[in-house]
Amino acid sequence: MPSSDPVTLTTAEDEPAVSKLKCEALNASSLLVSWRKKRGTCPSNRTVVSYVKTNGNVSTSFAVSMNDNRATISRLSTWTMYNVSVQPFNALTGPISKTSCRTGESVPATAPRIIKVDASNDSVAVSWNPVDNRNGIVLGYRLNVTTSSFKITETTSRQNATVSFAAVVSPYASVNVALEAYTTAGYGPASTATTRTPQTAPGGPPTNIVVADETPTSLTVRWAPPSPSKRNGLIVAYRLEATSVNDYKTIVVPWFVLAYRFDNLRHRTLYLIDVSAATAGGFGPTGYYVAKTKNGNPSCPRNVTAHPILKSIAGSIELRWTWTNATSATDPESKPTGFLVRSSASGSCVGAVRSFDVDRTATNATLEGLRPYTVYNVCLVAVNGKFRRVCAERTTRTHTTQSAPPSSFRVVETSHDFVSLAWRPPSSWPPSWPPIVRYAIRCDGCANGTRYVVETSVRFDGLEANSTYGFAVAALTAYDELGKWSDEIRATTAILSGYYKTNNAGSTHVVIAVALFVLVCISVGAVVYWKSRKRNRKARRRCRADEETAVDDATRRTSRRNSMEIVVRNDSDGSNSDSERENSPADDNRNQIYDQISDSESDAEAFPIAGRRFVVAVAQVHDAISERISKETEV
Image 1 (cartoon, one colour):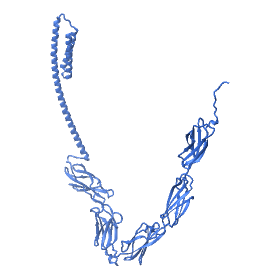
Image 2: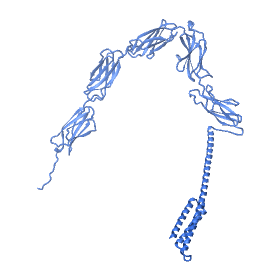
Image 3: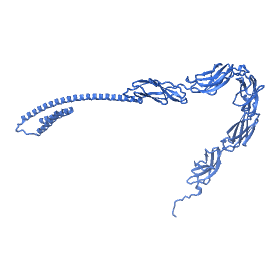
Image 4: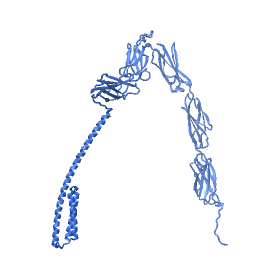
């Protein structure tokens, strides 16, 4: 038989596999997964562990090495069921092994919500809702009840409890409740609530009861709340009673009122004043004070009026009244011995600080030093010894102060027979004060003297030509009060044949600017003209010097040329005769060079203004030709 290569067959036993897959909770956020290699299978080179929440759809996977037979899954949710799978791999993919397990318990994440707390003098009843995020199995609830004198702790598995107090608690005492849920891992956060025991009537009367400001017809009572230990709740009201032999008055006032005046009482009468406090549980015991109304209720004047003083300093009010001798007839002490005038810019004038005495025979009084344009309440108080009676209260407003002068007062236009003026309203006039309705313009030298206008401009006509007048302006308010005069400005009318007009101060500025510009242009032109003349003089001097130099150079070159010709002729005569001598190429070249030199010199003489550079160049050419002729002659 022919030989052949061995063939490897793959069977199911070659696939890796695991057995005895286990999963257990390490703590509230970790799981431990373990397994073994299945007997009779090939070893794996890696194992992939996957996990997902039982009710989730997103799985997470990670791989462990071939030597590991366990893995820890961390950062999991507390008390949550997970599906775990393990799959080994080598060259082939092994089967998947699956299991499920739950993470461990933790303390409850949220506190139970207290929905009701009812307290009595001997117990407190509490009910609540279960915990939302339990993190395990809630085994029960712990309830802590605390008062100022004791603390009680009870445990229950229900969602309500009634805790009896160790002793009777005083009325309206504070009761604090704290509720916690717990699992095998411990207690979770606590929810708290505070309540109070029921209120009862106060156990003591109001304190510090006094009667002050006695008058013949009134008594003012003041007091303080009962001591805190005897209030037995929140004070909601006070009851006051004034009792005499032939008179009885009572009233209930709210808790925040701690003073009350009984009016219309009998003259020179003894009263028993009772004050009691009340809570939701009723009125408590009464505190009392004995007081007597005073004698001599003074009578009041009639026709009391108050008004600001016109045409005077702002901030003054005059109070007037008519004197009367009427008294209470039965009491000679009721006739006033004087009056007291009070004023206030806010609220009632009773008790105002600004006050002064007036003699009983006076029929008027003046209040000065008040704020301008301010509403004041003014009181006239009749005085009889140390007893006083407010006879009248009047309200009035003071006048404004004298306004500042108008601003920007100026002359707008002048002619031979009129002057136009303009201004602006005062800038410091408060907008809440009476408006400025017109202006007074005073003319010093005018026939009509002072004029009144509503606008902020005026024109005085009928003036004399070439005359000077003085003007001033002042503002008037709605009360026709004249403000301060502005500084006087003076204007001169033009002569009859001329006319002068200026719209504003800016025209004068333009004229000055134009004059300065023309002056600067003339100055610049003069400087330029002077520098040009100076430059031309220098140029003429330089040209004359160049002409003289050119003439001297031409004369020198002419003498040199003549001497060179003499040398050449003598040399030619010594070697050959005139008849035998023929013109050589050198002679032709010399003649051409002489012609060039002659032409150059003639040009230099014909145009001496060409400049120094041209003459120097011609001299250099001449020297070069002379040197060439000398060399040819030597040859």
